[in-house]
Length: 502
Image 1 (cartoon, one colour):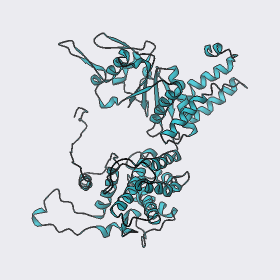
Image 2 (image 1 turned 180 degrees about the horizontal axis):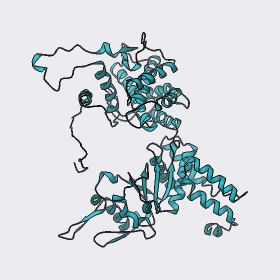
Image 3 (image 1 turned 90 degrees about the horizontal axis):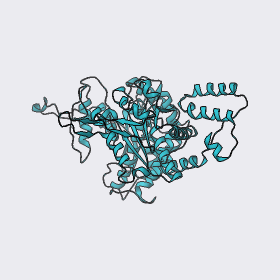
Image 4 (image 1 turned 90 degrees about the vertical axis):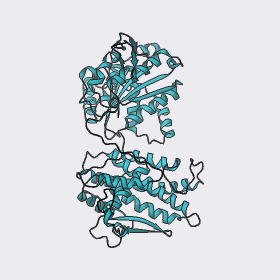
């Protein structure tokens, strides 16, 4: 209201109330409750409008930053970014609540860069995983004997900003806690989050939170948080549909067309590609054109994703995890074409053969990404669905087999389906090696599992192997690791008693 009065504009109190409700309450509501709120506002304030500031400059900066980061800015996600801006202007403590992959991290990063574009103030972010460090490492410790105080991560950051030795006071600082809001560690921040903005240390020292600092919490649930913490923070809710399938697919395609993939490629010199004439980028541009129809909204991949969601999985099925696996497997297929061309520079694959190879590998990647965490029945169902929906040529005589029983081979420039059963080598084991625990007898399952693991490892993706004892998890993983060049393996056994200090 004060801002409107200073600007000389006439103040409509009803519109001001509606605008206040929309800026403070709407960001924390799920879609169903938002419709109820709008209906209530219409009943209480009939005919009144509270559109609020348009934020056109900020929205333009957000779109420009999304273009620079090759993100696909959906309308709902952009609205969440604007809501985050409004909330951070009202609160110095904020909570971004939503499932993994709902766009929380991208939202605050894009907003921080967009504000720098609009206001010219440099933005600096610090990300801390509170579950990866102890409480003492986070806040600091006081030596009981010497009474000497040693700062923790958070106190060190706060002290550095307060001291402003390098001009920190002229910058915008966002400290992000990426992890569960657990009372065990977060209650020390309650005095910082309220109006006092003071952090009291065990040695009696008090550190004030400067006005250019915001404390953010990225969480997927608030079931561990206490009302004392939640009531002190502004909140923005990110629904599961904030980031759509099409947004994720377009981001991958844009990145594929603009940045050279990073991976282990034999015969290809290192260093980023500079032009579209680069052989690596030519293959990636072709791959983007091949993948685009399938990654479009309502395409084969999205329909298979929806179908797989209703099947049984070993752990909670999330779109973000499934798509991350899919994109890693697709990237490995692209790298395979690049590697083949580098090793056969005299007779590289032509565009047609490359398109066929990539199209078939897309089918395999879809099944493994969406049903790799399911049993044989789930894989068979996804395989049948994908095979029934595609126009690609399928393996001859596949009958009731799953498409995962086959691989796509490149021999002499020709693309062909190859049964994994035909690729199992004959192994002759000498008598004195029978009891060797490191001996791996290759089977169809070990070969195809090693292939999938090698693809994910080449893309530098973390892995989680699930299965009962004796099912071959360690054996398969070590066999896949041995296939990768320039790699040393250091095995560490974890348990429930393992701490981050290890």
